[in-house]
Image 1 (cartoon, rainbow, N blue to C red):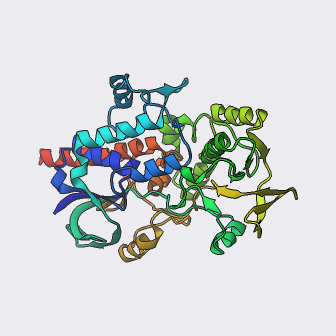
Image 2 (cartoon, rainbow, N blue to C red):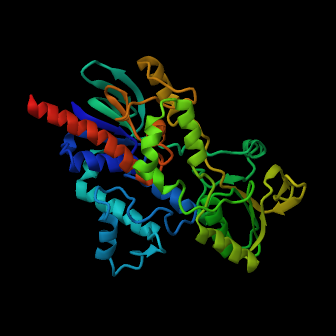
Image 3 (cartoon, rainbow, N blue to C red):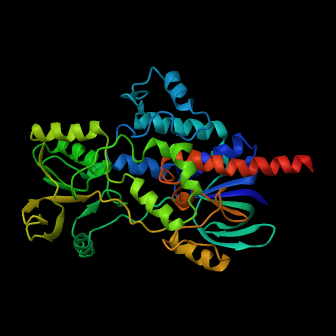
Length: 401
């Protein structure tokens, strides 16, 4: 019998596994992390590499370890390495530093010992435990933590989806078959999107094909330091949010305070400088509303202002569909176990992030309770605080008994 099964081995799943092992002394043979990728946080590493990211947007105090200073101390211990650096006022760690620190935390906690490659297929309530069917067999566990990331359904505009269905070489940055090596010198590129991924990708393409890269955004690109106000990491915003009982109002608050599509000032300045140097030829706030794949192998894009643009390749950086993560197999579980959902399709959970007496959530699945920062790196810490409160209370009650 397992004590915990964590479904999802990304940032949130890795943080929670580290928390359970390090703080609550859960034995490694009583814990399973289930994920379809080969190692913890591999999907994170793949996704961030695809965009040409060099520095994270979040500060050095947001990571997968329990001590807020852990990443900073790790950076100092690796001071002889060129990648052990942080950038700017907010000390944004380099991507290499952040990823090396993940591997350090995983090794320190021994999480490879409980990591299993596979996918969940079903959950059955057996009363005193849960039976979970997976692609590698079934297992019994007292608790399940759903740490599912909404990163499996890239969003395609309707016209782009039609072209892709006809096997036109249009790519989304988060397609399985897209890599940075897909961008080659000499080709002209149109990068579609206005968020951090789009701008980083456009800058990368401009370095390889200067003067042949175009960035088409859907409206002006908002500039913010972070992807949500820092007040959503603490009580100033979270306490009033928690007192709001109307989940429709909570959803509205979340929508209005998730700064999707925004970028930090320094990245916006990089785009302006690349444009001034004619490395990026065309920065337009008018999105592409139609596209044709021409006989000569090029794409003709029609923008909302009527202008047409002909390029060799089109790369979409338009994010993901905003559907409830895991809605496929999880939908059947929701019906079978009668798990409560809000009208927006997201879980209704208690303050400890319990969706069921034995099923907990983190990340996007917990945002109606955790707020606008739920999906972020620090959202894992916020979720960990909630679940820890329940575990500490349970341990205290057992001791008193």
